[in-house]
Length: 127
Image (cartoon, rainbow, N blue to C red):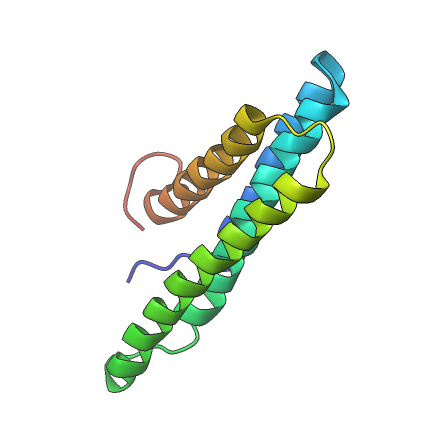
């Protein structure tokens, strides 16, 4: 059975953009670093809500609850992401839009990579 631990994916989505933001802080400026970090946090927080809702129920006996959890999680994830983007545009000074969306995309890619790593393992063998 393939098993991905959602909290590990979310943790990777928090650490990856934080490291990228630290790199930008060191090489460019604080506005870009904060924008990258905000984008990464938007991704991680919205995906956290999805993970809680989607993986709350398991098993064939709970199939309808699993489907409802996925739908509720996906809808909530979108609402949370839109709300956090709106807050970022309204309250972050010197926001770099490209860096914000880059941080968001980077966190998503880190999550996909982390999930793939957990399923396939470091040498490409299915566990």
